[in-house]
Length: 149
Image (tube, rainbow, N blue to C red; front, top):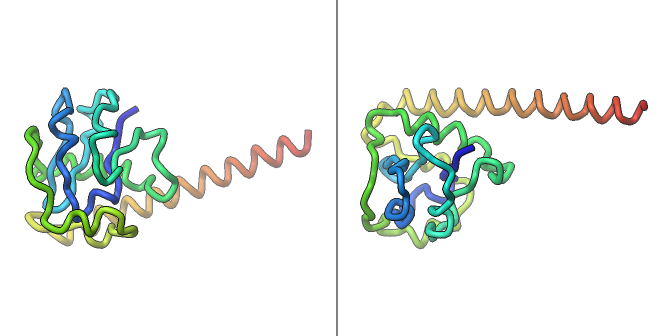
């Protein structure tokens, strides 16, 4: 398992977590950080450091943030999302944005090909929706089997 950065980081980009990461798994985008799942060692030292409470262990991600598991993986592979190893100042209005919900549309595509990013995000959302439907269907089938026994 790995850790992920959720939507609370969008438009905030606090970097307190970066200072404590022993393996430099954070990647920096224009207005958000993500965790590279191939680098994260699941140590959890970053979780209490985040002022926006944006970091979760993969198994603890709230249902409405599950899409961020794939989003972290995809964005961490983009060449413009570089490794960040030293703390920086948060975005100027971070405190105003840290508790605002539904910020995916605010994910900045600065320094990225906006169409590619938009297509990647849409594709990830579709994949996640399909997987959620399969999981729900499987759960319903298991429940039906259990009821019939």
